[in-house]
Structures are given as structure tokens and as C-alpha cells.
Length: 300
Image 1 (spheres, rainbow, N blue to C red):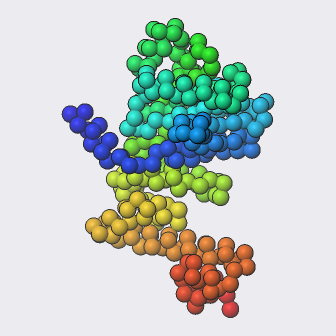
Image 2 (cartoon, rainbow, N blue to C red):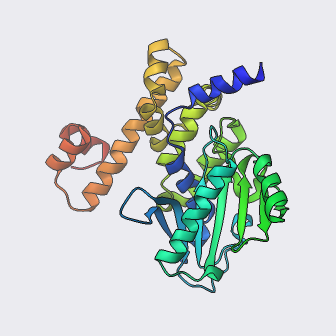
Image 3 (cartoon, rainbow, N blue to C red):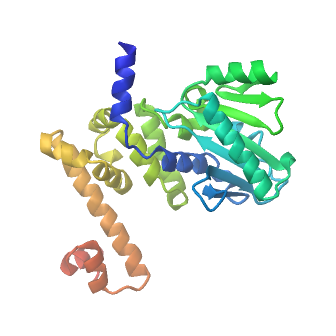
């Protein structure tokens, strides 16, 4: 029965863009260190298709990143991500380890400056047994969900997002199919707190798509207070808005979506006006009649 449930969940989440969502979660988790960290996404190793998922480079070698998932960080930090429907097998480990070695050789990086991290949604017990049995490595859980492998040529850690603590890891914890009302409200609050510093689009789209049934219930309960312009845009992109309208679910939600979209357009209009754009251009971009724009923006 459990296998059938898992297969159903995999089918439901097929096609979800988890990797861009992971990048957003990583940058959000480390937002306080954005001035000392540089992110290189899909970093190419050769002229072919060989790439690293995410390369996090310290701009200052002596910078200390005080986060549980970053305690092993050195100058060059390779991060390989596995979506909730993927597992980290022994062979996948070797592929990533090989790419790390190629990066060290091609970019002439000191091995002492290199780390390798795997971010997964299930504990790779077979891999742990392999590392202990064949290499004599030790695997220690330094924090809930953070497993550090000692005894290799570079620091390696395996991060099980399901087991991470809530205190500082909720961005990663929520890259899953079990979004709670508490955590959605938390993400909503963090977006309002960080504003323009935090572009949540990719993260929201993946998490909303994976948890669309839960989202319906949460927003139905919380009402229009949840329907910011960004949340509304995400709801429309993943097709929930159309689905709700078709099914007639919660008329208040439908009105809230429309209200949120209108607010987003007006916010954009105000920004364009402050940049000196004329009303004709603003009207053409936002698709709001000039007369309505003048009224809404209190322009004589």
C-alpha cells in the first residue's frame, strides 16, 4: 500500500522544477551572507554537458558562514541536489565525486579549499554502509539531518532535508510534498520582511505545485490576507486559479486572486511612473486604461 502511495506522489510531482527552487531556498537560507557568497548555477566543467548543480564560492576566504549546512564550507563549495522523487545512490555519489575532482583539476583549485555537499529528501543508508565498509569513513550527524563524512580527500556532507531543524532551515525543509499551514504563513512573512532582496518565484511554484491540495485548504482558511501579488501570480502559473474558477471553489478566493493581480499591476504602474515613464506606456504594459490609472494613482 505504501509503495502505491509513493508512486502516486511521484506521478503528481513529475515535471516540478525542484532545482531552481533549491537554489532559491539556499540563497534565502544564507541571505545574511549574500555579500560574501557568490553562486554559480549549473557551473560548466567542460564544453560538453558536464556541470555542477550549484557552486558556492566565498568572495573572502576568511568569511565564516554561521549556518548548520555551511559549517564545512571552505572557499569552493559544490552542492548537488536531489529532488523529493530522486535518491542518492552509490553510483550517483561517485558521479558527483568525480565531477568535484574534475573541477579541482580544471580550475586548479587547492583540494584543501574544496567541499562537496549533497542535499536529499531521504537518508541514503546504502551509501552510508558503502562509505563505512569500503573506505572506512565515519559518518556523523553533527546537527539533525546534517551528516558529515570524514576520511575522504575533501570534506563531504549529506543533508537530509526532512530531518533538518526548524530554527534556521525551513527554506530547505519545505522543499517537499508536506507543506504545513504554519510554514506557508512563515514563508509569507519572510517575503514581506525581505522584500526585493528575496525573489521567491521558483520556490513558490515548486512548493505550491507539489502541495496544491494543501494550498487550497490553507488559503481557504486564511482568506485574502494570503493573496499577495506574488502568491497570486504563482497560483495562476501552476493552474490553481483556473482550476478554482472552473470548480467554483471559494468565491472569496477567486475575488482575492483578482484583487491581488490588480494590486500587483498597480504596484508596477507606480514604479514605472516614478521612473518617468508616460501614462501611455504604463497603460500598454499593465493593460489598465489610462483613465483608471489616473484615478487609482490619484493623478490629476
